[in-house]
Every structure is written in C-alpha cells, then in structure tokens.
Image 1 (cartoon, rainbow, N blue to C red):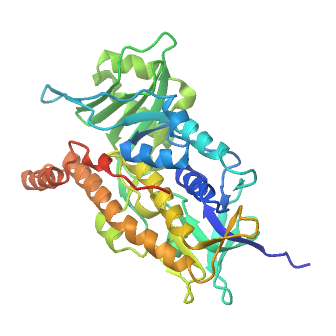
Image 2 (cartoon, rainbow, N blue to C red):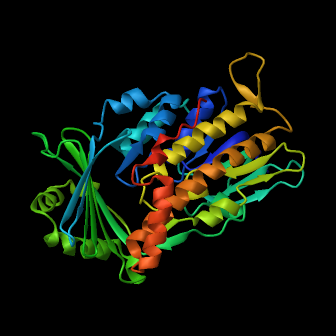
Image 3 (cartoon, one colour):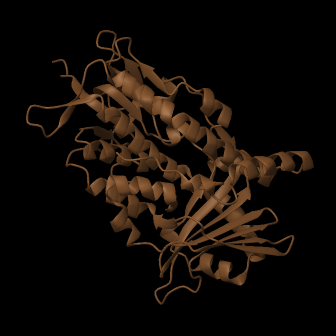
Amino acid sequence: MEEEADVHGIVIVGGGICGLATALALHRKGISSLVLEKSEALRADGVAIGVHANGWRALEQLGVAAELRATTNAITAYRSVLQQQNKTTVLPARTELRCMTRKDLVEALAKNLPAGTIRFGCRIAAVDQDSSSHFSILTTEDGHTIMAKLLIGCDGANSVVAKYLGLGNPSEIPRLVVLGLTRYPQGHPFGTEFLTIAGDDIAIGRLPINDNLVHFFLSRRRPSTEMARDAGAAREYVMEKLNECPDEVVDMVRRCDPSSLWTMTQVWYRPPWEVALAGFQRVAAAGGAATTVAGDAMHVMGPFIGQGGSSALEDAVVLARSLSAAHAASNNGCRREVRDGEVGAAVGRYVWERRMRVVRLSLESFTMGNLLRTKSPVGRLVCLVVMVLFGTRSRRHADYDCGCL
C-alpha cells in the first residue's frame, strides 16, 4: 500500500537554536510549523553561547528573555591580555552581553512550543521539488517522505537545504577549539569580566555565566588536516599549551566538569562576498511554494565577533514577521494558514532585509579573523581600517535592533 503523503505548510530542518527560535517566532504569530531534528533529543552542541544586546532584543520578541536573564550575569568589562607584548587592556561593556549554557537556551525555546512541533530522530537524506505542486519533498534516511509548502533550512554549516539551493560548501578555518564549563560551588573570583588572552599559538577566553558557573574556551592553530578527524588528539594538542597559561586559567580548566568538554576540529565560515551574492531562496513560479535558509545555513561565520547565535535569533524574528503578512486567519481565528501565491514574496522580503545585515557581520568577523592570522603589515593595516570603519572594537554590531515580530 502506497504511503500517504505527509504534507505541511512550513517545515523547518534543524532543531538547534535557530530552528527552535524560528518555530517559536512563527508560533507567537499564530503560525504552525514542523521542526525536523536529526538527534533523538534536544541538543546543546557548543556548551555555552554569548548573546549580545541585539540577540537579547530578539529574545524579548520571542518572550523568553526574562527567564534567561535570571540565569545569567551581565558582562560589565572586557579584559584583553596580549602575552607576548605584556599588554593588558580593560574596557567597560557598552552594550549588554550575557553568556548562558546552550542547554538553558534550547530548553527555554522548546518548552514554549506546542506539543508535537519537534519531530526527533529525523535525518534528511535528500531534498527535491514536486513537479506538480512545486512543494519541497524531503526524504529521510529511513525512507519517509515529507512535503512542505515552505521549507526553511536551519540545519547548520553543512546544511542539506543550503546545498539544495545551490549554495557552495562553507570555507574552513584551520583551528582547534576546546570549550567547557567550570562550577565553583562557593562562588568564583572573576567578577563579571570577559577575559581574553592571546599568547604564542594559544587563545583563551573566559566568560562568567553567573556567580557559580564559568564558560571557557582554548584555541590553537590546527597543525594538520588529519587532526580534524580525531577529536581526542585535537583536545590533547590544545591542552599541551595549558602550562603557558596563568595559574587561574590552569586551575579553571583542570577543575572543569569533564562531561562539559567539547572539541571543535573544524571552524566554518561563509566569506562575505558569498553572503552578498548567494541565492538564499528558491520560489515556485506562482509564488505559492518556496525554500530558504537561516542561521549558520545562511551565514555561518567564525567566532571572532561572537555574533553567530545572536544573528540567528534575528533571522527568526525577521522571517516570522515577513511570513505573517502572507498568512490569513483560519475560520476559528486561532491558527493561520499560508495564503497561496504570497509565500514567495514573503521569503523575498526576509532575504532582502537580512542580506545587508549578515554581509556586514560576515565582513567584520572575516576581517577580525584575518587580523589574528596575517603577518603582513599591509594586510593588518587594511584589517584595522575596516574594523575602525565598522566600530568593531566598540562592538557597534551589537547596537542593531531587528524590530518587532
């Protein structure tokens, strides 16, 4: 017997921060969606996340900012240490920045979604288009077929949906990153400073989450491509540099929760010129079906300005706002359905509004990354000029407001 078609108005691929935020933004506008998540449960890859003022504005629109702020302390100062120059700079925090565990964020987003919104254990093997309805056809690894009038790819840097749209593979930064959490039951002594240390082939970051919990990261240049396939060896290689770190950093890392340690062997980014020119949408001729991407699937960027998560939250708000104009109230006035012929225009508005914002963020992150890597005086000068123009040091990128839902 032929399987009955599983048809939905909006399908979101990826149940991470961006996918859940997009589903919640749509829910706040009275629009139903289905989230397909490959894991068997909520995932919190990446240990913790720093959210800037622009991200908190988006979380306010999603209705979860208050409960999340209650779990975190605001960063009040940035302390930057250049070990080789024996130079320390301390600057006050001009805009809101808080660090939280990814677990707290994804759980806050997920618990505000209607039951049944997330379908776990759903790995997408292929995406195609139905020749008659122009709906997207998603085929899972177990052979199940799902059809969507609107398909939204929130499935990360190596997005299946992005590949369907014809986007190229993101570029790679050859760095290794070890992240973790350290708990201090009696309280930590670090106050509310965000500490960064740049040493000889080692970069260190420490962000207090609250009075008892601290997030840290250690990063080194990856010496070989082979190490990208061995997370254990990568972690050991990064930890070799620990003896060159200040005592308080060594103590913090050694007393961390081993289960919280997470090693990144590949750091992805999409160059700003690709973000500027990429086709982030596919719309059927009549405009009644469409596909787009958001978050890392659209504009994955290096960690250098810390805007990956916050910009994904912005995407969610802007996309839901654009789509709400293409939805009509149902008979009972509670849920809203996609109006035929208008979903394509709504996706177009979303892509148009987001493109210049994410191009700028991608350019800032790309420039900061190049500044840290290049040894050319001319190259460093060009990077510094771009950063001055964009106000990167003063974190002007965090002043952005994506607007109301």
